Length: 155
Image (cartoon, rainbow, N blue to C red; front, top):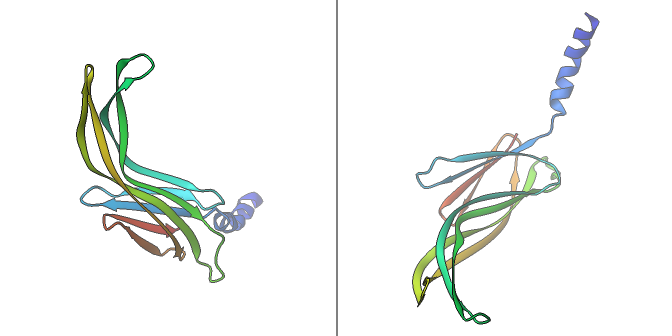
């Protein structure tokens, strides 16, 4: 019976000592928002929300003088790296947000070979970096490239 009372006294201390976590929600256009949770420690977290697309790559092998056709891949969308920094003096949690937005400019047909045609993929990549101060239990919103809304919250 004493153990139950002892455990009830320790319960608030144990729950208070639990590691805080970073809640990340990403919304884009009319798509359903995606939510992720990461423990706040000294690690970095990568969030890859890019979509994968296929295209045809064809070239002439100079050594064998043969046509070679392969299927290749490009990715479009948002790639984020989140890194918690040491807590600030006011108690807020700085989060370093680094990433890039990749968009497809177009696919053009290139040289036609015996096994297929070569497609040329034109992509644009926009890199960004910011350090965001997130207060405990308050949301901080970051808008990226006018298309992605990232909501950070420390729980």
